[in-house]
Length: 370
Image (cartoon, rainbow, N blue to C red; front, side, top):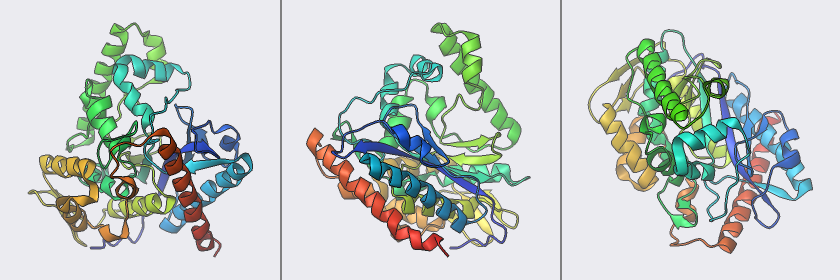
């Protein structure tokens, strides 16, 4: 069902893409970083992040994201490079990090399991906080976390099938397994004070592990604060005054911007909407958003990661929560089904989906010329 939003809140999006050369090999972005505003390096060598500014409307967000990706693609064409909209690089290549104190500390705290994070490319969606309704916005995003299934884009980790949402499994169940509170989805909160207490506890745990491993307090404080020391999928971002959803994979631009805008419409303006927590099913109507109890959300989210839209329970839940599930075609289900993806096949897949991304952007250009 649709939820009326007469005055939508501002929204923005950050999307990460693997960079490849003309033979499908992973490579550094190089000059692509200067091709557009909002283009930035990530912490691993072959990933480029493209960010938008806060946008007032769905059409504005779509236009800006496509314009920025389009500018990067123009430069990439000259350099014989491409952008790959898959959540993992599919193959078994070694993914190198860019040296930094921040990454060194994360490796120290997380340990060898930080290797999983190096193989992940995702999307972050920001929605402007609505004064007085921030907690409802945050809790609604927690309940909507299974919507990650709508854009699952790679089932492979290092050439082997892992889950419909391999990236989400890498993050939540593997990378942060020894520090689970840092990366898991957190329970609903009752007020801002409870959220602050959670952040402070997680930050204290992070600092303890890091200092016990020999990291100096000064280095820690210059790289992390309570907000930046957690990787839970739903967060308040005080510096942007947004609620942020970090769960979805990178995917085709049309897919991620459609999901981002739908999410912003659902949680952006709750002025005339009652948000309640009740039962196991969840439902969105014009007047009410009923969030399932948290344990039920976890079950839906786990199924969204393991099976994606092949799970009937996930499909039904997302439809009740206001998504047109049939409008999405997750790439993960297209490329899945192989027992192993060797180096040549991985390069071919990356080339194929880099071309898909280019077609996706070219088709959208007429939309933001009017």
